[in-house]
Length: 283
Image 1 (cartoon, rainbow, N blue to C red):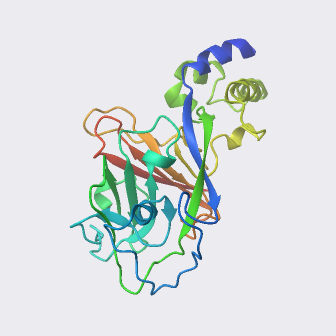
Image 2 (image 1 turned 90 degrees about the vertical axis):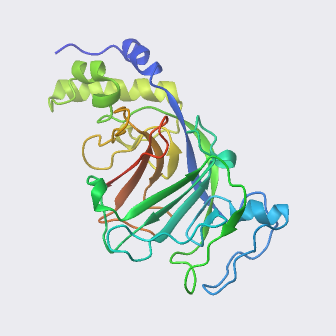
Image 3 (image 1 turned 45 degrees about the horizontal axis):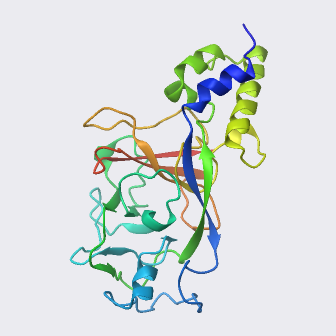
């Protein structure tokens, strides 16, 4: 088994480079007035339309709290059990998407913990992504007595992104074959070390173990597959692999959890943005 040369691996990886936006916990919504954000579950959401700073706040990226929707939209129901879906997160891509983002400006994500879908069977239902190219008359949706999760906000940070080890099978089959990726031999592990050094050289990311590449809560870039192979879904219209829309790892950003230290992945087709996919992997 030949030993990989780092410079050759760099050449293979360079064309795969993407960017991603890492979302880190913030104390208050970016770009809004400083005030106490610790509102109770019975707080009345701001009316929309409103003053510009209030409108910016209503569409601010957040996990938990109450979601923003287009005027006329109602709270979504689970297409599996017909109960109300739980609001998990919304992302203002136009402001916080620092990466080469998908052609949408805003999206919300809802999930059903009663049906607890893992996404492999889309007919199972139990989750929803609402995406918008523009919000013309946004309003905050009121739901029962208040939010299911405490409202938390994020600060965006731009990073470069390359596929993790298992992602090479899909995104760089030539490199996967050279390692080879399906071998557990000592020589293959040595080649993975070369791949890790080459990836670090290109991304210039903060030092971390190669197997943790792309970890964290993020929009865009490549997924961090927590436990298993690459499960990137394909678009049912064009059959091309979808791109990562949102990755949620266990974090201070949200109290939402999936299984045993689960990571949730949302995907979207760049061409057919109405086509989305969901996957979950647990450690």
